[in-house]
View 1 (cartoon, helix red, strand yellow):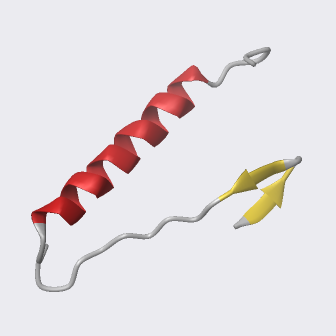
View 2 (cartoon, helix red, strand yellow):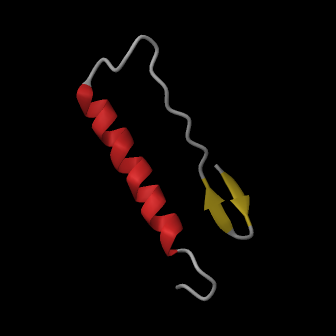
View 3 (cartoon, helix red, strand yellow):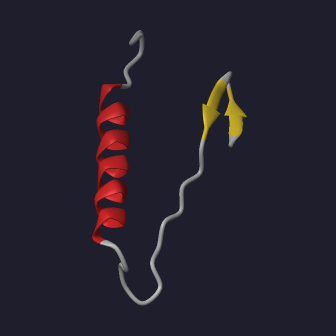
Length: 48
């Protein structure tokens, strides 16, 4: 976690060695990626 212009930023790195052991892990990963993409799509000057 770091600060950037008063915002908290997390650094995510996810990888599996030898494949996904539990499919629920893959589901949670995909939800996180889709959520981040949705948030980034909404970021515009003046957005609250």
